Image (cartoon, rainbow, N blue to C red; front, side, top):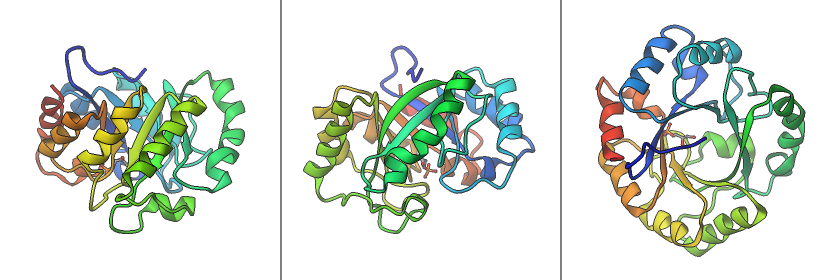
Length: 239
Ligand code: 1GP
């Protein structure tokens, strides 16, 4: 379900936060993102959503031509309008709610809705300040200096059976995940590697792809940038 364009080095995932995009103009933005080269849409928020989660998802469904995957911050962020769901386990933390509890709550709905499930080892890495994922999940990120520990977490996720590893610095992170970490993780795992959090320039994205990232997730930068071609520039960095 997560696929790079054939021949490209990596895939570009655009994260749509329902509270940042809002209900107005969703279709226009989504249309533009995919026209400019987005390979996949992630949809969700690390915080409780204030906008109408389902209504915005419905708008996205009506125009998305690329896979539309839920990236839920909790078991409440489930909708029938998506194609699939990142079934995230926050393995960098030790909070049972994010290791199993939310999964148990969401599983019957996910099954009923027929969403394709993407079991994902989600690893939060420190980025210089307390991110909203840390606050909401009440977990500590892994120190970025202890690379063997990060690799061990990624390996454990794969050995448990998770099909993707997601290295996350946190939305709007000051310091995104470093190429050194990506290189070390990529050398040990065989499942696809997703990287996100604080990636602000196509050049930095290209550096992460060179280091071994299979998918790059961008969110904040698209909301904040005045450059209408920003997604195209990121997509070109994936070639
Ligand atoms: C956050 O990895 C995503 O969960 C994207 O982060 O919004 O900082 O691009 P940004």
